[in-house]
Structures are given as C-alpha cells and as structure tokens.
Image (tube, rainbow, N blue to C red; front, side, top):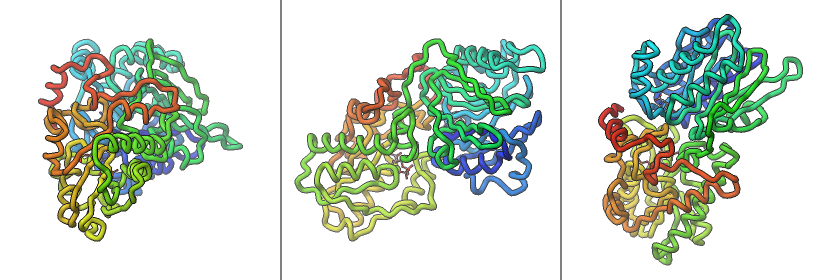
Amino acid sequence: MCGIVGIVSSSPVNQQVYDALALLQHRGQDSTGIATAEGRVLHFVKAKGQVREAYRTRDMRSLLGTMGLGHVRYATRGSASKEEEAQPFYVNAPYGIILVHNGNLTNTRELTRELFEVDRRHLNTNSDTELLVNVLAHELQQQVSGEDLDPDQVFAAISRLHERVEGSYASIALIAGHGLLAFRDPFGIRPLVLGRRTTGLTGDEWIVASESLVLEAGDYEIVRDLAPGEAVFIASNGEMVSRQCAANPRLAPCSFEYVYLARPDSVMNGISVYEARLRLGNRLATSIERYAPTGNIDVVMPIPDSSRPAAMQVAQKLGIEYREGFYKNRYVGRTFIMPGQSERKKSVKQKLNAMSSEFAGKNILIVDDSIVRGTTSREIVEMARAAGANEVTFTSAAPPVRFPHVYGINMPTSHELVAHGRKIPEIAHEMGADHLIYQEVEDMQAAILEGSGITELEMSCFTGEYITGTVSPEYLAWVEANQNS
Ligand SMILES: O=P(O)(O)OC[C@H]1O[C@H](OP(=O)(O)OP(=O)(O)O)[C@H](O)[C@@H]1O
Ligand SMILES: NC(=O)CC[C@H](N)C(=O)O
Ligand SMILES: [Mg+2]
C-alpha cells in the first residue's frame, strides 16, 4: 500500500506536502517522493526511507511552487529497495507529467508489450506505476493539439486509460503549466478523498489524499471521496472540474484498509475506520462464544497497535477484563509492511515485549486484527508462554488470509501465507496456540459495511475471488515466480 497526496494552494506547497506525507507514513515506509510545479517547471525529490529522514533542508528549498504532490511507498511491483522505482514517475511529453500511484496493476505484461510495440514508449524499470504514467501520457498525447489543455481532453484520456489498465489505482498527477489531476479506478479499490479550504483573499485551495485524517490536520473541509472511475482536474488558479470517466463504475473498496492499513481516525468511503474495527470486535466476540469455551479465560489482550479497538469490544462483549500485556516500542515501524521476511521477524521481537506480571498462570485471549504470514502470531504465542501464560487462545478480527493480494497489499504469493492450504487446527498448531478463532467472511463484510449503503467489498485475499475479472491462476503463478522483494 502507499500513501498519496496532491495539493493546489495559494502559497508554497512544499511543507504542506511534507506534513501530509508524515501523516500517511503508516501506509508505506520503503521510500518517499515529493514533486512541485512552479509554472512550467517541475521540481522533484525522491529518496529511500521514511519521510522524516529522507528530505534534507536543501531538498525542501528546491521544491518551489504552489502545486504539489507526494508519495510514501510500500512496494508491490518491482523492488522496495530501488531508488529508481520510488515514486513519483516523470515523463516529459505531453507538457511534462509527474505521477504518484497507490495500487497495483494486474495487466502489466499486456501493458508493457503494448507500450513497447504499439505506442513506442520507453520503460526503464519494473514498476507498474511507470506503465500507468506512460499510458496516461500516450492517451493525453492523442487528445491534445496545441499549447492549451482543455479538461475535456484530460477526461477523454482518463476514459481511455480506464479501458486499457486493469487492477487498482488511486492516482494523482501534475501536468506542468496546467494543473493537478486525480483519478480512481472503476472499482474504487484504493481510497482517495477530496478536500477544500477557503482562504478569504485567494479563493479555494484543494487537497486530494489517501486518507481523511490528512484533510482534518490541514483544516480542510472534506468535500467527498472521489467516486470509482471519477477524475478531478484542478487548474493552477484553483478552478475544479470533475467527471465520471468509467463506463461501468462499481464501488468495491479494499477490506484490508479497514482491517489493518488505514489509520483508525480516518473515514473512508463514508465509513469510519475506527467504528468498523469496533464492529469487527463485536462480531468476533460472537464467533468466539460460538466456537470456544470462554468460561476459563482470565484476560483479553490486543496486539498493539491495529487490533486495539476490536480487542476492546471483544473484552466488553464477553465481559472479560481487558489488559495490555504487550508493550510496544514505538520507534520500530509496522512490521507487516516491511520488505523481507527476516527483517519482519527480527522486528517483531524488537517491537513487542510481554510483561510477565500480566501473563503468569493466566489463560489469555489474544486479539489481532489479522494473521497474514503468521510472523507476529508465532512470536506472540512464544512470548506469552515464556512469560508464564497458561492457555493461549489466539483470535483474528479478519478471516484467514488464504490467497494472494494483487491490488496493492504486498502478499503476492500464497505459499508465504500461514493459512494457505491449511485447516484452522493446522494453523493453530503452526502458531503454537491452544485455540484459534477467526472472524467469518460474512461477519467481516457486514461489520465493515454496516450502515454505509455500500454493498460490495474487495475481499479477494480471504475468498480467492478477484473482482477485476482477469486475475487467473496463470497470472498468480507468474506473480509468484517474479516476486523480488
Ligand atoms: O501475520 P503477520 O504476517 O505477522 O501479519 C499480521 C500482523 O502485522 C500487522 O501488524 P504491524 O506490526 O504491521 O502493525 P500495527 O502495529 O499497526 O499492528 C497486523 O496488525 C498483524 O499484527
Ligand atoms: N502499495 C502501493 O500502492 C504500491 C504502488 C506501486 N504498485 C509500487 O509498487 O510502487
Ligand atoms: Mg499488528
């Protein structure tokens, strides 16, 4: 997953983009980049690592202009460690376009072939984002004739892009000398929210970002989520126009945003992430009562951070005391989004420590938001036992993750998923837990969507059903064989 932001302001935008990226850090830690437009000139800086360490003062000074965008990357294609695959991606024609992307394209092989053989465009990396910016550039080139750029031409190019590109993409681009463009894939898999701030003297300032908390922090009013398939074009003078560019848009947001990825204080597609997590806890409690004896459980414990809201509700519903037995070192990042299994494993130990006083002789019910590779849960069970726990019941507020995620979360191979091809008692054995209880798929869907009016969720990693239609076993085997991070 990645975090993206774009701002059209009436004052220098560099610090505003930087601040927004710092708030989106939980969405990606591999690399980061910022671009700004100063008239026809585009400035950009990209670097490995996290926002706070990636930018030097001289970088920030070079990012001139009142329009800008930024990215924090959690790689899904190409390599996490290659600086040339960090975003944003730039192409010099037409006009000069620089683009950031959250998501993952699934017809990369076809697009690569078409771009080389038909469009005659050069590709220099394995990044799917480089394909996306080249398709945009090619399609825009087909529309334009002179110096001027009409929003109709931009929207026509996005309509063509939707026809050619498959997978997930929430994307923002600067078109030099013209404006800022934002668009969302026809299923709205990845999030994108639009905000406005009215300054008395200079009129409207605009922001588009992955999560609403960025808007709140910058005192922007939340206008709305971009609709699936919609594109928004904001000219440098602050004039905004939008259009539905997809033939058959259908909202099916990614369930994993609500389960794990997004910050709980964000509202996505009208659904509060925090409240969704509370509801996940309520429903999980019902499953726990159904499947396991709870009479002898002494305490309910979360695995910090993401599972806290669900764990609180489980404790409350079951009428069992809620205790925090794991202390989290806040200076270690999120382990799940780190590249490489050995780094993830080492970092769980560095990150969490079990406090013996909370475990000794007790029967513990642990709640995590999800179990993916099982890296965290294996270590946790071991730590709980070492701290003197008696029985360990492990529960997950999400169903078993059994299938690769191809829409922007880096779990591309099935063999690395602890639940793949295993029945629940076998997974419990793998983890060393006495009991293991998962949320049911229907309960997760109902918990997330309750009261939202949305009828569909992207849940392929739990169900194996891929909504973009062309994700075949052959494609998944190819992804697995070509995984390199
Ligand atoms: O089964 P695994 O492969 O270990 O992945 C699942 C774990 O990873 C995430 O935690 P993470 O440490 O990334 O972030 P958090 O602090 O927000 O919970 C998630 O909350 C689970 O705890
Ligand atoms: N997680 C994401 O959104 C990744 C974006 C893009 N696919 C990349 O790998 O850079
Ligand atoms: Mg966690």
